Image (cartoon, rainbow, N blue to C red; front, side):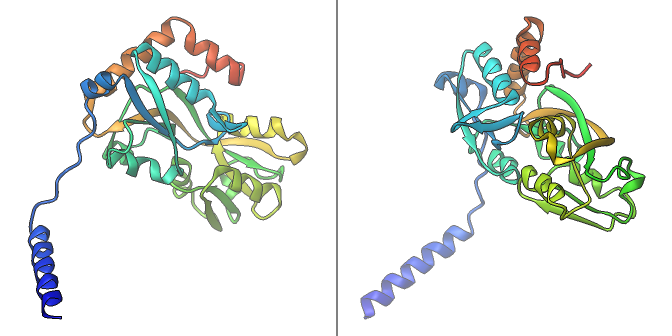
Length: 260
């Protein structure tokens, strides 16, 4: 009994001492470390078709193909990770992966905690509804609107006055389903995603309205990891120039969606 108390006191003392030590910052992997490993770890959501999604158990989509093509130009293989959208930036800050590509709009708030790469497409958040009277931002007054949590769509929707209620969902597909099933009046999401969703289910009755906002979309690296961002941007510019980007874009959208 006494021995147990001594051990407990010793452990308590050690823990107390550790608590006084300064926390060690976890640094992102450097470009040289990634190149030495010949592999870059990239995270995405996997629930945002046609940009990143699973098909027959395999991760695919426009952003997956773009990142794979960029990595190839960098002489790297890719180890893919798939997690919830709202965990992607936190994982990047914890050095769990080197880069994130998951349709993050470039915003001032995000730029404070991450470093963005060159935008890989330009788009915007559009209003989607079954009600033909809900097409413009003004039409959202007094309406129940749904959106995915942690997105720039939510950030911009909060700026719209007189909306009755904004409900968030962990997945964009859940927000879409809420409108399709009549549990909400409108859904705000990416223009290209909405077009693809309606094309996949034309009987849903969903129609695309006006833009709530327009935005540039980029990949993310840890804040201040400029060498990695620069290397990624250099390789990205190469796939813009050699036709790879256009081929991938036309595969998914039948148009070139690069920022012009």
